Image 1 (tube, rainbow, N blue to C red):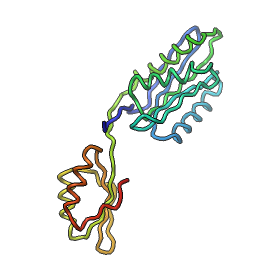
Image 2: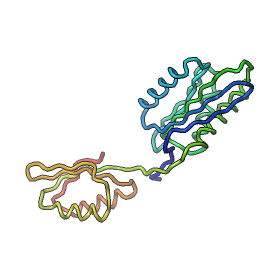
Image 3: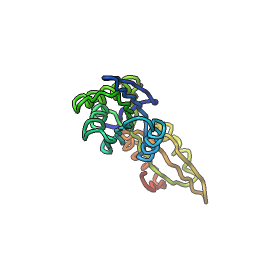
Image 4: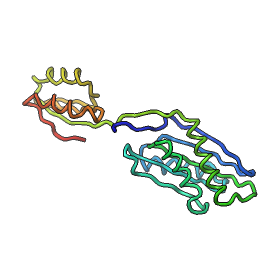
Length: 200
């Protein structure tokens, strides 16, 4: 698979249970740094809330993830939020659920349901999109071969991320959907003077 699902833009949801209010916020993210920044921002913004819990999933392979209960009983907040991310097969997403305590305890099963449904509300409000996993390749070739390279670019349609020219030598970084990369490589390899410097 060279595609993955994420959300297009931030979204919000709300769930109330026995006067406890659960505010859910979903964000598209691409790094742990971005997650930390967003969580810190919401912990400051909702400083008066009882709990600011969250879960995130990163990477097309969906192998980098974390769930945080932020003081709720273990497994009652972050895990059900992460469960919603998993059941919708999403990645590059952070969901924060802010809880305002309503004075009545919900119990562990009640908390699990509330956090799960709050996260589900935020996902339901989001537009889910499919993105491709792209790989890039860095090449160099003599200036006279520019037309041949550009013919291949026009034919296989990778994106040109960067290009340069120095001492009669051209360099170019190309990006293309992962399952199209073998075709691009084999076409470029037909130009004997072209060097594939490295894959990025």
